[in-house]
Image 1: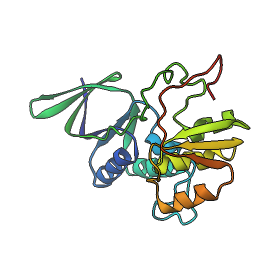
Image 2: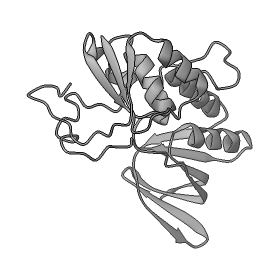
Image 3: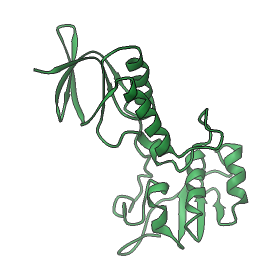
Image 4: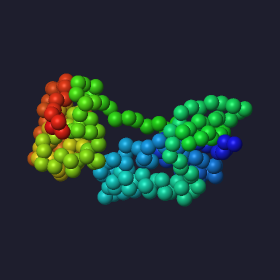
Length: 214
Protein backbone atom coordinates (compact mmCIF):
# COMPACT_ATOMS: atom_id res chain seq x y z
CA UNK A 1 0.00 0.00 0.00
CA UNK A 2 1.31 3.46 -0.91
CA UNK A 3 2.64 5.51 1.98
CA UNK A 4 0.70 8.70 2.75
CA UNK A 5 2.01 12.20 3.39
CA UNK A 6 0.29 15.50 3.90
CA UNK A 7 2.71 17.10 1.44
CA UNK A 8 5.14 15.88 -1.19
CA UNK A 9 7.73 18.28 -2.61
CA UNK A 10 9.17 17.39 -6.00
CA UNK A 11 12.63 18.90 -6.43
CA UNK A 12 15.47 19.33 -3.97
CA UNK A 13 16.89 22.72 -4.88
CA UNK A 14 16.74 25.79 -2.60
CA UNK A 15 13.03 26.35 -3.36
CA UNK A 16 12.08 22.74 -2.67
CA UNK A 17 14.16 22.58 0.51
CA UNK A 18 12.65 25.83 1.78
CA UNK A 19 9.13 24.56 1.10
CA UNK A 20 9.99 21.36 2.92
CA UNK A 21 11.47 23.27 5.85
CA UNK A 22 8.47 25.56 6.32
CA UNK A 23 5.96 22.73 5.98
CA UNK A 24 7.79 20.30 8.24
CA UNK A 25 8.26 23.00 10.86
CA UNK A 26 4.51 23.64 10.74
CA UNK A 27 3.96 20.04 11.75
CA UNK A 28 3.02 18.47 8.41
CA UNK A 29 4.32 15.11 7.27
CA UNK A 30 6.50 15.99 4.28
CA UNK A 31 8.47 13.97 1.74
CA UNK A 32 10.92 15.64 -0.63
CA UNK A 33 11.82 13.73 -3.79
CA UNK A 34 14.93 14.60 -5.81
CA UNK A 35 16.15 12.59 -8.80
CA UNK A 36 19.75 13.85 -8.67
CA UNK A 37 21.79 15.54 -5.94
CA UNK A 38 19.89 17.57 -3.35
CA UNK A 39 20.80 21.23 -3.62
CA UNK A 40 20.21 21.96 -7.29
CA UNK A 41 22.51 24.14 -9.38
CA UNK A 42 23.48 26.38 -6.48
CA UNK A 43 25.34 23.41 -4.96
CA UNK A 44 27.93 23.94 -7.74
CA UNK A 45 28.52 27.58 -6.82
CA UNK A 46 31.98 28.09 -5.40
CA UNK A 47 30.87 31.11 -3.39
CA UNK A 48 27.52 32.71 -2.56
CA UNK A 49 27.88 36.30 -1.36
CA UNK A 50 24.27 37.52 -1.48
CA UNK A 51 22.52 35.11 0.90
CA UNK A 52 21.55 36.77 4.22
CA UNK A 53 23.38 35.68 7.34
CA UNK A 54 26.79 34.92 5.82
CA UNK A 55 28.74 38.19 5.70
CA UNK A 56 31.90 36.41 4.52
CA UNK A 57 30.05 34.35 1.94
CA UNK A 58 29.56 30.59 1.83
CA UNK A 59 29.95 27.88 -0.79
CA UNK A 60 26.77 26.72 -2.48
CA UNK A 61 27.41 23.15 -1.34
CA UNK A 62 27.74 24.19 2.30
CA UNK A 63 24.65 26.39 2.09
CA UNK A 64 22.33 23.67 0.78
CA UNK A 65 23.72 21.19 3.30
CA UNK A 66 22.78 23.57 6.11
CA UNK A 67 19.29 24.13 4.68
CA UNK A 68 18.77 20.39 4.26
CA UNK A 69 19.94 19.63 7.79
CA UNK A 70 17.72 22.35 9.22
CA UNK A 71 14.70 20.97 7.35
CA UNK A 72 15.43 17.39 8.39
CA UNK A 73 15.80 18.50 12.01
CA UNK A 74 12.15 19.56 11.77
CA UNK A 75 11.06 16.22 10.35
CA UNK A 76 11.47 16.51 6.58
CA UNK A 77 11.98 13.17 4.85
CA UNK A 78 14.03 13.01 1.65
CA UNK A 79 14.17 10.37 -1.03
CA UNK A 80 16.26 9.83 -4.16
CA UNK A 81 14.07 8.99 -7.12
CA UNK A 82 12.41 10.38 -10.24
CA UNK A 83 8.75 11.35 -10.40
CA UNK A 84 7.26 9.81 -13.55
CA UNK A 85 3.58 10.59 -13.07
CA UNK A 86 0.97 12.39 -11.01
CA UNK A 87 -2.71 11.49 -10.80
CA UNK A 88 -5.64 12.51 -8.61
CA UNK A 89 -7.69 9.83 -6.89
CA UNK A 90 -10.40 10.04 -4.22
CA UNK A 91 -9.44 13.56 -3.23
CA UNK A 92 -5.74 12.77 -2.89
CA UNK A 93 -2.75 12.95 -5.21
CA UNK A 94 -0.93 9.81 -6.29
CA UNK A 95 2.73 10.55 -6.96
CA UNK A 96 4.28 7.84 -9.12
CA UNK A 97 8.06 7.47 -8.86
CA UNK A 98 10.83 5.09 -9.85
CA UNK A 99 10.98 4.03 -6.19
CA UNK A 100 7.27 3.36 -5.75
CA UNK A 101 4.00 5.26 -5.40
CA UNK A 102 3.09 7.77 -2.69
CA UNK A 103 -0.12 9.53 -1.67
CA UNK A 104 -0.25 13.19 -0.69
CA UNK A 105 -2.95 15.70 0.15
CA UNK A 106 -0.92 18.36 -1.67
CA UNK A 107 2.06 18.44 -4.02
CA UNK A 108 4.55 21.25 -4.57
CA UNK A 109 6.58 21.02 -7.79
CA UNK A 110 9.92 22.81 -7.53
CA UNK A 111 11.49 21.35 -10.63
CA UNK A 112 14.30 23.87 -10.97
CA UNK A 113 16.27 24.51 -14.15
CA UNK A 114 18.52 22.72 -16.58
CA UNK A 115 21.81 24.04 -17.92
CA UNK A 116 21.21 26.25 -20.93
CA UNK A 117 22.90 24.95 -24.06
CA UNK A 118 24.13 26.86 -27.09
CA UNK A 119 22.58 24.32 -29.48
CA UNK A 120 25.46 24.62 -31.95
CA UNK A 121 27.38 22.08 -33.99
CA UNK A 122 29.92 20.09 -31.99
CA UNK A 123 28.49 20.98 -28.57
CA UNK A 124 27.04 17.55 -27.82
CA UNK A 125 29.97 15.78 -29.46
CA UNK A 126 32.47 17.41 -27.12
CA UNK A 127 30.34 17.43 -23.98
CA UNK A 128 32.56 16.16 -21.19
CA UNK A 129 35.59 16.41 -23.50
CA UNK A 130 36.20 20.11 -23.21
CA UNK A 131 32.64 21.43 -23.17
CA UNK A 132 31.42 21.83 -19.61
CA UNK A 133 28.45 23.42 -17.84
CA UNK A 134 29.98 23.50 -14.35
CA UNK A 135 33.06 25.64 -13.79
CA UNK A 136 33.27 24.65 -10.13
CA UNK A 137 33.15 20.95 -10.99
CA UNK A 138 35.55 20.96 -13.93
CA UNK A 139 37.77 23.99 -13.36
CA UNK A 140 40.85 21.98 -12.29
CA UNK A 141 40.69 20.04 -15.59
CA UNK A 142 41.55 23.25 -17.46
CA UNK A 143 44.65 24.13 -15.47
CA UNK A 144 47.09 26.22 -17.53
CA UNK A 145 44.78 26.17 -20.57
CA UNK A 146 42.92 28.88 -22.45
CA UNK A 147 39.20 28.65 -21.66
CA UNK A 148 36.18 30.29 -23.26
CA UNK A 149 33.11 31.29 -21.25
CA UNK A 150 29.99 32.09 -23.26
CA UNK A 151 27.66 34.78 -21.91
CA UNK A 152 27.60 38.10 -20.12
CA UNK A 153 25.40 37.54 -17.09
CA UNK A 154 26.11 36.76 -13.45
CA UNK A 155 26.66 33.06 -14.08
CA UNK A 156 29.14 33.69 -16.89
CA UNK A 157 31.27 36.09 -14.87
CA UNK A 158 31.09 33.96 -11.73
CA UNK A 159 32.35 31.01 -13.77
CA UNK A 160 35.04 33.14 -15.42
CA UNK A 161 36.34 34.27 -12.03
CA UNK A 162 36.34 30.68 -10.79
CA UNK A 163 38.15 29.41 -13.88
CA UNK A 164 40.80 32.16 -13.75
CA UNK A 165 42.23 30.42 -10.68
CA UNK A 166 43.21 27.47 -12.87
CA UNK A 167 43.32 28.56 -16.51
CA UNK A 168 46.11 30.58 -18.06
CA UNK A 169 43.56 32.77 -19.84
CA UNK A 170 39.77 33.06 -19.76
CA UNK A 171 38.02 34.57 -22.78
CA UNK A 172 34.48 35.78 -22.09
CA UNK A 173 32.56 35.75 -25.38
CA UNK A 174 29.42 37.89 -25.39
CA UNK A 175 27.00 38.59 -28.20
CA UNK A 176 26.54 42.21 -27.11
CA UNK A 177 28.96 45.05 -26.41
CA UNK A 178 28.09 45.35 -22.74
CA UNK A 179 27.57 42.93 -19.86
CA UNK A 180 24.33 42.11 -18.07
CA UNK A 181 26.03 40.92 -14.89
CA UNK A 182 25.92 42.86 -11.62
CA UNK A 183 28.31 45.79 -11.26
CA UNK A 184 30.18 43.98 -8.49
CA UNK A 185 30.93 40.98 -10.69
CA UNK A 186 31.80 43.20 -13.63
CA UNK A 187 34.32 45.06 -11.51
CA UNK A 188 35.95 41.84 -10.31
CA UNK A 189 36.13 40.37 -13.80
CA UNK A 190 37.54 43.52 -15.40
CA UNK A 191 40.18 43.71 -12.68
CA UNK A 192 41.31 40.12 -13.21
CA UNK A 193 44.38 40.14 -15.49
CA UNK A 194 43.60 36.61 -16.71
CA UNK A 195 40.14 37.52 -18.05
CA UNK A 196 39.62 39.19 -21.41
CA UNK A 197 36.41 40.01 -23.29
CA UNK A 198 35.38 39.31 -26.86
CA UNK A 199 32.42 41.52 -27.76
CA UNK A 200 29.66 41.32 -30.36
CA UNK A 201 30.42 37.68 -31.10
CA UNK A 202 28.19 34.62 -31.37
CA UNK A 203 29.50 31.06 -31.13
CA UNK A 204 28.34 29.03 -34.12
CA UNK A 205 30.33 25.81 -33.77
CA UNK A 206 32.62 23.90 -31.41
CA UNK A 207 35.56 22.13 -33.03
CA UNK A 208 38.26 19.90 -31.61
CA UNK A 209 40.26 16.75 -31.90
CA UNK A 210 40.40 13.65 -29.70
CA UNK A 211 40.26 15.05 -26.19
CA UNK A 212 39.32 18.68 -25.97
CA UNK A 213 38.05 21.43 -28.28
CA UNK A 214 39.79 24.04 -26.14
